[in-house]
Length: 204
Image (cartoon, rainbow, N blue to C red):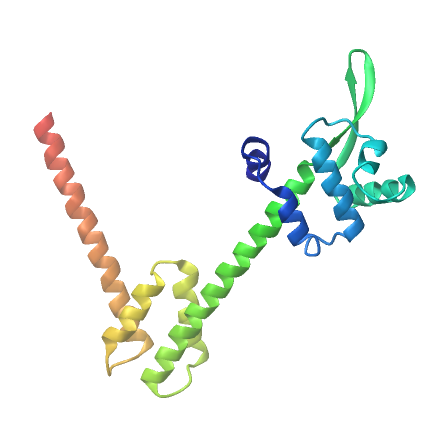
């Protein structure tokens, strides 16, 4: 987990992240406070202790116990028994918290890319409708969706192809221009491959 590594090796301010994101992580203020206390203890030792937490928060032991149980139920921490020097002790893990924060930010990035994708498609539809002077039909919208789903062309290439149509805008004409871009790319790649073959022959 990248966040855990950043926290342990580079002192990432995980506390700031928790304070900022605790509502989105569906934590109560009390749960967040106990989790912050656990991170404070985590830097020194992994042994679980209600007393150690109580020195860092203004809750009684019963309230702390309820918060700890809730944090485990929500998947933010684990407590397990560990043997050391023939003695058993309770230790806690905060890996699930790192994982939850990473998942939160991953979802944010997916949403951002999805919004960007939707904005790009909206821009292309608007350009085509302006060029055609009418709303696009179902099969035309399906073609546009396919351009983006198959990822053969970049958004920039699609926009440039529409601009290249000038007063001859149509889905078919745009696709013809786009297919020429692909063919040109293949030709260039073949030329490079041939040149490399010639160099290889000379070396041999």
